[in-house]
Every structure is written in structure tokens, then in C-alpha cells.
Image 1 (cartoon, rainbow, N blue to C red):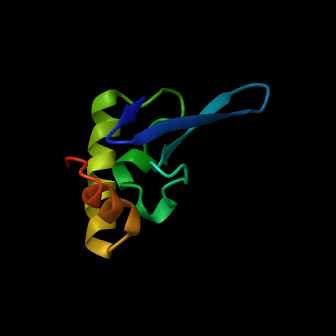
Image 2: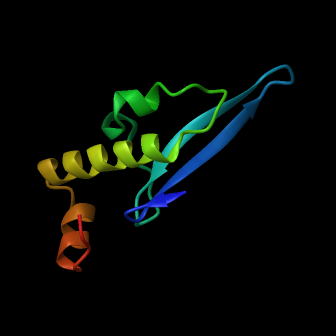
Image 3: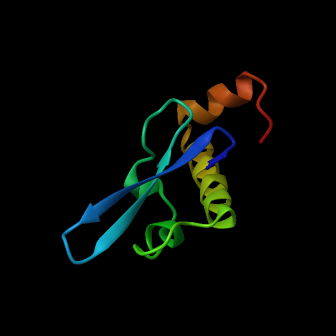
Amino acid sequence: MQYRGYTYSTWEDDDGDVVKIFHEIIRPDGKEVPWELVPREFRNLSPYRLATLQQFQKAVDEVMFLEFSLGKPNVVNNIQQGERI
């Protein structure tokens, strides 16, 4: 799923008995959002189910706020290119 240019991505760890889902947020430039910027609530999602659209949107909004607050270029570039936030 996508929201504001960010993409929800998953990968699975299958150890034969159990399959765990790892959740990631990918920036518009294709790079993964660093783990320390991913909101705690999103990091703590169950490894046995996918995130909902609402959970993903909330996480992206928080990431965008943090990146803007920290002066990260991805958000600044999006604003300069006329993307609505």
C-alpha cells in the first residue's frame, strides 16, 4: 500500500514452523525509513498480521513530522515540489 509517496513493505522470515512478518516503510526515494524514526506503535505491530491502512497512514504522518522536524531532505524536497502534506 502507498500513502503520500511512502510504501508499506514486508518480508517474511519462515523458519519452517512459523512465518513472521517484518514491517518496513519505504520513502519516496526508495530508501527504507531508519528503524529509529519508525514510530514505536508501528515497530510493535504483530509479526503475524499485516498493518491496516490506518496504522500505515498514522506511521507515515509521524515519520514525515519527524523528518521535517529534523530537517531531513526528503520531506523538504517534497514540499518544494508542491506535494500537499
